[in-house]
Length: 243
Image (cartoon, rainbow, N blue to C red; front, top):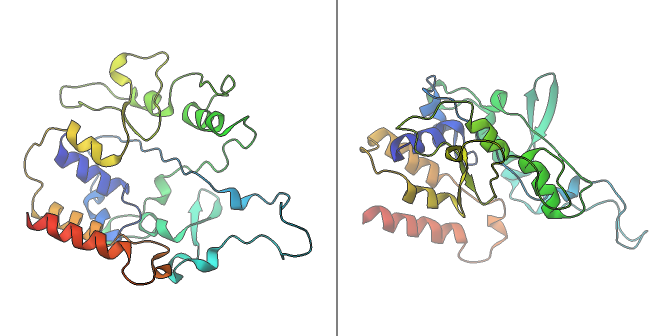
């Protein structure tokens, strides 16, 4: 994997899902290789309709705070997954709508596991279950990570230098060759240091990357008074591009 193909596959696979449908243009053609992307979303406790710890009689229902989001992020999206219609957050719009150039929406390629396990002894145990899809021993994971198992689906080659990458999550390998063990990084940009520079991305790819970056936003931007973090980020990005 080189930087060129890495960026193109991220744009195409919707890893920049919250950016813009324009970024999905690069995936309009059939990809050369199979890729598996697994995302873990923390939180989601507001969907639990369990007992409310607040004093009864003083509050009407659960307050999820959705009304505090910017208007563009309030209305959920209806997505058809198989025979069921589910609701996704508005930030997932780039995965559900056709992009410029005829890129197909990617919701049909997704499998969504909601509340994989809600009865662990602790949060680490729940993450271990999600990581391996096997019940942990207390908080100790058992088995190999799902990413490790999926990486074994294709043969290793000289050009495939990173068959398995794990960002911000542990990676386990219990029964497979060491080559399939996930390379762990703390943040996504750390991957760039592991890749060969390779050839130039090309003008079209560079333009799509810039458009994807510029389209990113925050669901709470309007809650800030004065200068907003998005403004600082936009200014910093502009300076870097001039270097």
